[in-house]
Each structure stands twice: as structure tokens, then as C-alpha cells.
Image (tube, rainbow, N blue to C red; front, side, top):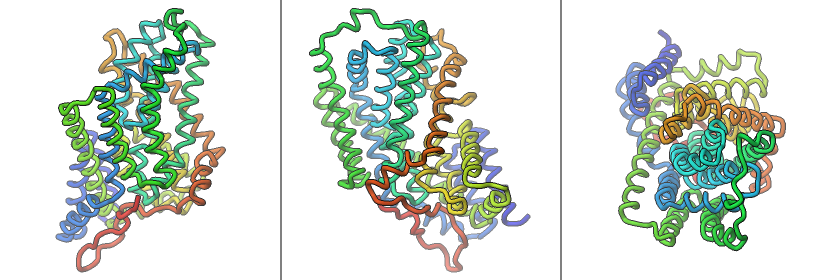
Amino acid sequence: MSDGMLGLTQLFLFLFFIMLGFPIAFTLMAMGLFFGYLGMQERIFDLLVQRTYAVMSNDVLISVPLFVLMGYIIERANILDRLFRSLQMASGNIPGSLAVATLATCALFATATGIVGAVVTLMGLLAFPAMLRAGYDVRLASGVICAGGCLGILIPPSIMLILFGATAGVSVVQLYAAAFIPGVMLAGMYILYAMGIALLKPEMAPRLPPEEVNIPFSQIAISLLTSFIPLAALIAMVLGAILMGLATPSEAAAMGSLGSIILAIVYRSFSFAKLKESVFLTARTSAMVCWLFVGSAIFSSVFGYLGGQDLVEQFFKSLPLNTFTFMILAQLLIFILGWPLEWTEIIVIFVPIFLPLLDDFGVDPLFFGVMVALNLQTSFLSPPVAMAAFYLKGVAPKHVRLEDIFKGCMPFIYIVLICMLAIYVFPGLVTWLPDQLYGSTPSVGTPIQLDAPPEGGFQEDEALKIAD
């Protein structure tokens, strides 16, 4: 068997094992070590050490645990409850007010956490019963919560964009700028859809009774001032410091973590027990991400050395593809992979396969990264493995069927596809803000891979040393 076929065998065996439920990070390392030993003998162990050290010393990844800690502290400080109540009062006279308040809360809270499961679960406990009590259609209420909870994948400061930047060698700051307009646009499209349904089919989203709508303006203002404004200000400071170049993502994440602790203290929701729990969850999540990166670095290095990457490139180049059709094919493959895999696995394992092809087809890596982030919204919403739907089902009342949640997600999948089409037609939606803030968009980065092993062993891969 040729080295190239050995690399493809490595890839297909990996897919087979993860379908059986094996832990992904350690399956990656096991496949990399096994096939690496077949291809390069004992030097694979040098590669293991070098890749592990290189990933652990990657400056970009420092911001991941800090942003995750910020999200968990906010989640456990009961800030979400205050935020939803204030937005519900403020949007009382708007058609579909509960759905609008839910989507706005999800967008803001997803920006603070970026953890889909946490946002969907909390909103499923908080907003879902409120919408059902108000007479909302189960499918609409389900779709609103599932789609809103996924916005954290795209809207900065997104952890997914940090991982994409570290994988592709692209500036995280410029990725944030590129994703800002599409993220706000997608959230706005969700809200317009909910309002449109409320106007066209009022039986699906009834208006709230007068006693819940006719609230004095002073009470609404105080509620917004004490709940919405502080969290929005914290997020604006973190994101603004990054986009304006005042702080690196890691420095801004540290500032956000400190701000979330201060916010929890002000709201009298801070305790050392909650802090301990948040730190524990942060360590667990960060460890998962780092081991995925280590496993991916070893796997992709061996895959590239064996020639698997060359075969994939030759396959794509042999097809009659232009830039548009290449993007369609790449996004279709990522969409299909989103059914069995989480977005973290897709970013660190499969996206690097496409990165060397971006130059060949003239695709801006910022544009590609934003399209991937949009695409991954659908992976959480599309059956049969719609994780957001399963998160909601876990906390929904017993009479809510999983098929109803799936049906509720479908219109929002179509909205994502419309948003992707709009960005295809008007790429300036992605590139305009980075151009205005930083002058130009970066060239394609170097994916984490290995072309050939030197005779004397491996040196640390400089492509992993990406400055914030």
C-alpha cells in the first residue's frame, strides 16, 4: 500500500472509530501514533512531544479558558434571568415579543459564553415555559431557542473563531471583525422572522395580556439599566478592546473574566462555591479543547507526511471547479460532517484539509472562516443529530416531542442558508469591516501539518506560534 493510500486509510479508520463512540481526542492520537510509526518509525515519538509542547505554548489558545470562565461565571450568577425579564418588558408591544426577547437574550448571552449547550439549556428552562404558557406554538418556541442558542458560534468573541484562527494561522482579531456584521445580520434575520410569523399567524405567537404589556416606562428603564446595560457594557468593552487594537484577545478575555466576577458580586450572586464550580467546568472544557488540538496536530502531521493531503488536493484540482463551486462543495462536506461531529472536531481535524486549497481557488481565509461558522449553525439544528434540539429536549416538558423541535428548527436552517447566499453575493459583508479597521485582509495561513520529517528529528513548528 502506498503512503498516500495509508494516509486515506488513517482518515477512514478514524471516522469509523468515532462513529462507534470512541473519545475523539485520544482516537486522533492513537491513529496518528499507529500510522506514524508505520511511516516514520521511532521519530513519531519526537513528533508527539514537539506537537504537544507547541500546542500548549500557543499564545492564541490562552484566551479560550478565559472566555469560557467568563461565560460560566455569568451563567451561574443568574444574570440571564434578569436580562430576559428586562428585555421581555421592553419588547412587550412588539409582535412576537417573547420570541424577540428570547432571541435578543440568546444573542447577548451567547456572545458572553459561546457555549451552545449552556445557552440552549438555560433558555429552555427560562424562556421556553414562558412562551408555552403564553400560547406560543411549540415548534416556533423550540426553533427560537435552538437557533438563538447557536449564535455564539458566530458572534464574537466566539471560541470557534479562536480555534479557527489558531488552526489556519489567521488573525483572530480580523476574524472577529469579519464575523461581526454576519453575526448581527443573522440574529436580525431571526428576529424579523419571529415578528413576521407573529403578524401573519398570530395564533402561533399570541400577544401578551395587557397587564404584562402596560408597564410604566420608568420601571422598564430601571430594569434595563440594572440588567441589560451592565452585561452589554461588559461585552462591548471586551469586544471593543479587541477590535480597536487596545488589547489582544487573551488580555480582553482576562478583563472580561474579571468583569464577570465584579458583575456577579454587584448582583449579590457571587460565592466561592459558584466560583469553584466555574473554574472546574472551565478546566474541563479547556482540557478537551487542548487535547483535541494535540491529537489533531499529530494526526494531521502524519496524514500530511504520508501523502494523504496531496491526494485530497489532487482530487479537488482534478474536478472542474471554480471558486464558487469549490466553496459549495467544501461547505456541503462540512455540513454533512456536522451531523456526527461537534464543531470543535470539524475545525481542528477537517478544516485544515481545505486550507491549502484556498490559495488555489482564490478564497480569502477570513471569508472561508466566517462561512464555516455560519455553516456550523446548521449542524446544531439539522436532524437527525441536531445537538441543540437534544439539549432543549432534555429540559423541555414531557409533552414536547423531539420531532416538533426538529420541525421548529427547519425554518431557521433556511434562514442560515439565505444568510450564506447573501454573503456569497455580497462578500463585502465579511471583508468591509476588517478592511476599514486594519487596511487589508490577511493571506491564507498555514494549517497544522507536516510535509516531511528531517533526518535528525522534529523541530518546533513555527506555524503554531501565532500572535494574538
